[in-house]
Length: 133
Image 1: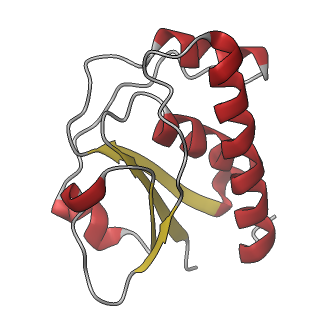
Image 2: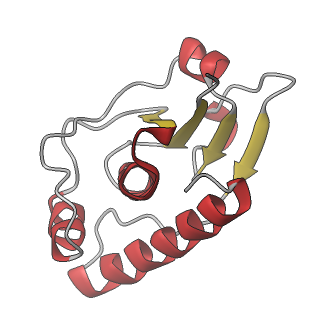
């Protein structure tokens, strides 16, 4: 059975891509392989992102930022970039989507919740488009 692999990429893999991956995993369950990575990963998930996600019922406190590798892009069917710019490797034949989403780094909780809600909306639209649930 073919399982679609979606890779979310941002710079630090400590905010946007972690939120997007968590929402897609939450909505799609095991029907999809969800991954996230960063071109310059941070050491930990942004603490305000943890609070914002927990407020929406999703605990990502056990997640750790991961380095974006060429192998991660090679296995992905869809690569969704969220602000990594030229650091994101490009492979022909992959579907690339670029989401212009504000970086939660250094933002207050109210702003991070707005960012989280925007990411959740985009993930819900992706789920509908892909017809995966």
